[in-house]
Length: 244
Length: 245
Image 1 (cartoon, rainbow over the protein chains, first blue to last red):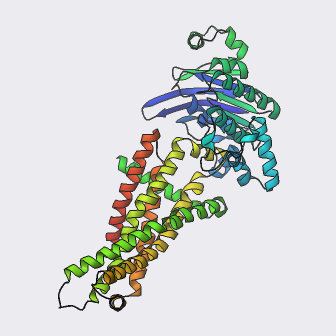
Image 2: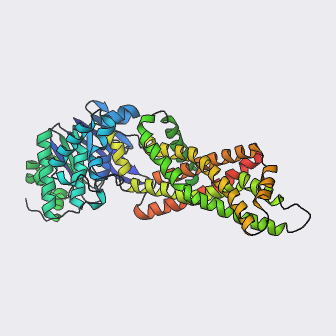
């Protein structure tokens, strides 16, 4: 379980958000929504200690994330898979090697075992035939799917998605959303999805957290969101042109 | 204020690199790749630089000493010593600041702004061990090798230019070069290239590793890496000359 307590972050004099507290139960999919620039991705990077807060804490399976030594932190990080906004594929190696990358360094699998696992992961994201392609030859949607295959290759407990459907056409977005739901079910993972796409939220999330006005403005289940009369949340949903 | 902050960041990066230097298995593969990129792939440009530096130096030295007061072999002595003590190391380093330094800062800068470094960290890798250590170590090990190549090519270039231009026969050039050849000068050149290798790769890695702001940020980081590398090569050249000669 992930517990965020009283988290505050600023860059210089620019306050991003303050006193954010949130609990993410195991096996659930949480969508963190909010306007562009409200600090959603900043919050996501705190969950993996890629950024550190000004104050507050994050507890992951009982471990205080920001108090861990670097060696301990690296072990905790291996519980996570992250799909970055631009997929963050390593452009010096091909698609297959990108997915195989964590296996080569963190496991003792033989070459045959690595190949079998990579092919299985690429199959899960419907890219079995693309292993030999250089990452520069992949489309935006394919890059996200390869990033997803790499994120789940070590069978993580938590997967963090940073804007998984941004910049994609509606059809590809739909496919990515379906993939997120399918992977959460198949692998029993806890998913945290950063998005401002309300269509995605309704398709994939069980819990929703809304960042607005430099704070956690609202949080609850999908059904609670649908019934909510919280004005900033309603404004956001209305502005996204999505009718609930 | 910004300069002090950057100096602190640079020292912190070096400390992290030093602390993780024993994790050899983490960067072994990258180290050998960098040996090839920094060392092997720089041989053609270093050979070219060496040959032309030696050739031009021979022609200019002969022009300045166009008198019967000295034996012609003195040209070989001056060219040989200048190449070994100074030019092979410094001109080689300035060329490599452009070739090697720019590549390192661009590569790491692009990895930074496209979140590839974050991706490495998020998987549990130590990105400094994985990316910075092999590049700096390769610089430290490969620059002295490149220096020796540059020195040999420089003397060869001088010898060929002297013979082709009719200034002095090859045997006379080599006689002059041998007369003033001192092994400690080679040691001095190797020490200098060792330091230059560290200066160029560590500054370039630092600038790339902390790049920000997209394509423009990577461009700025690369420009700063190249300019700073050249400045610190010249500065460290002066300090080493003052200390060791």
